[in-house]
Amino acid sequence: MNEIWVDTDFGFDDLWALLVLRHLGKRVAGITLVAGNAHLDQVVSNALGARHAYGFDAPIYVGADRPLVRDSETAESILGERGMQSRGQYLPDGGTLDEALNAHTALQNWLRSAQPNDRRDVLAIGPLTNIARFIQDAPELAKKITRLIWMGGSNGAGNHSPLAEYNALADPEAAAIVAQSGIAMDAVDLMLCRTVAFGADHMPDCDSLTFDLLGGYLDIALTRGRSNMSIYDPLAALVASMPDAFEYRTCDMAVSTIPDMTYGNTTFTENTNGSTRLVVGTTLDAAQICLNALSRDNANVD
Image (cartoon, rainbow, N blue to C red; front, top):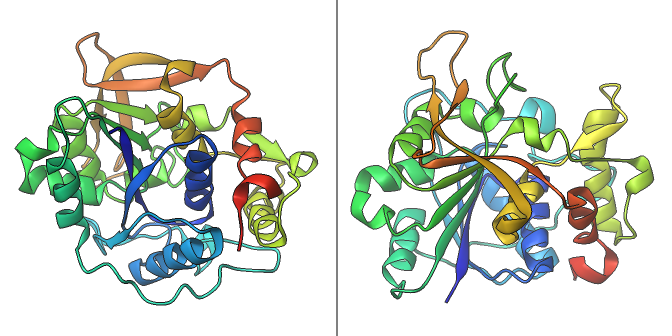
């Protein structure tokens, strides 16, 4: 059975990524949570609220509440204390977490359950803390990950520092461990995401909750004088769902863990034997596919 696991710091575009997976018929086996967009308790609240509002059926497991080494640095200065902006409505109270297992044990069980011909793809759309800890604690089992699709890094300038993209800068040590592990990884970097965007004229016909959350996401760009907002995590979900529709460059990824202006900087060096593929393009109308997942017919808001 081919399933996908999602590791997320659950802001709005993480929710959007899950809707893209559902829209494209991907079965999500489990969701692990990591601090990033907001502190972990808010990330958990967002995930539970999204499950309640959008009817997700995947189990949710709590993971790392802080990076491996560095002090925590959320994206709340941009996204607000909820880890997502809105023009009105926010996610409802999703109740309490029922799942007793932690993220590490849940991912371990899922990988162990794989049969010889099963794929075990992991979509990571936040800091890589959970994945790095798993590699450190269970390196042989981590090799069962068929492909890790990560929205992170930048083959150019950064967005949270001059040289670093947020998911890399939030835990550079974790990203470095994953890069050095040899696990096959597709990196959906900042430069690619900035080629896929939407504006006010592209808002889909969606329910009021989704409209408010998508509008709040767009407002991040509008309030900064930009007419379009880039699409990040949903694009990574599209890569995970339709890998053959994208172009790649095989390379080695390195991550700076030096605590200076380069901290979190990612470099991609072409190497035909490298374990990382940098996603460099697609012939798809990627923005429209992602927006379609939010339409009234597809989002399935309760």
